Image (cartoon, one colour):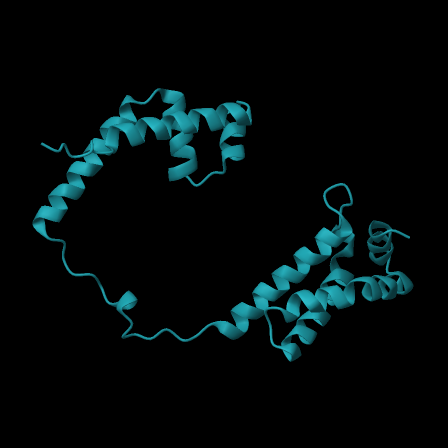
Length: 181
């Protein structure tokens, strides 16, 4: 019986299918976890992975991923959760990252404002489709695929527009090399 069928049977609460799935994947899941977790924690997280598999087997869709991919994604997520639980240190209030930055020097503030104004001008000079793809991907945080769907254009067109926009920004904002004379 293949792995996908086993997971589907686990979704129907078939304990024998779950036992076979555990035999197939238990050692590999534990091996994956043991590479980045202490042995005792790897055992605990491996058990947690299989509890999640038992509880969430109904959510597995064979058309979206192989059963092994689905299982190892659950294992990876459980590993990240365990690392977050155990590895988070208390913040040190004297750490420089928590100390507020001093005020900006006047010349640095002027240079920053001028750079932002130049960037704004260059963005305004971009063709509207290139400007929109830049705004969606860099300012709104959309993926290129999401931006392409929202703009109702093919993904390849979105990639081309983004590449052209970035080339134009780079060529306009990069200062020319110093001349030697």
